[in-house]
Length: 134
Ligand code: HEM
Image 1 (cartoon, protein in one colour):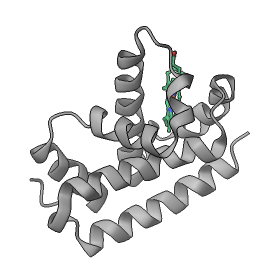
Image 2: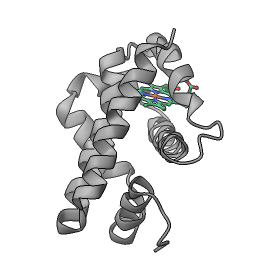
Image 3: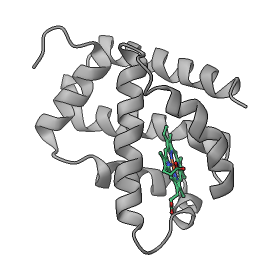
Image 4: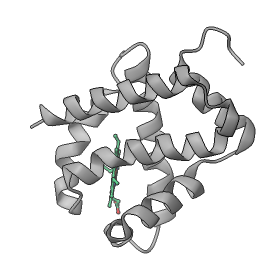
């Protein structure tokens, strides 16, 4: 583990030590909390789309929590293009909460107060970012 990683990065590293691929647990939770979201994805090839959507969302999160070199801008641009999929802004934003909760459950006692505070702040900042996206 990288001692210099920020708490968000660390939470993903710790999860990767426990689970090779977050796709299953994240979408299981998403569809449990929002059953209506399942039908938004195409039935054929949906697995691929879901996997790459999650990978891009994680990349955006890591950039937003770190360097802010540019990947994070995907959040603002995708929120508007998701109107076409019938994804409300509230649902779009909740995807990040779903990722957080998946990691928290996976980490168990390795989920520290520092990681928790960093995620709370991140979710608030993503809310703000989405609120000003047009
Ligand atoms: C629960 C929230 C979300 C739902 C229900 C959702 C749903 C979808 C659907 C239905 C597609 C189209 C799949 C297809 O082509 O058949 C898609 C594509 C995509 N999603 Fe999401 N999405 C959500 C959140 C996000 C978030 C938070 C991000 C990233 C910040 C994201 C990034 C993308 C990207 C990059 C694509 C590829 C196509 C494109 O550029 O529009 N999605 N999403």
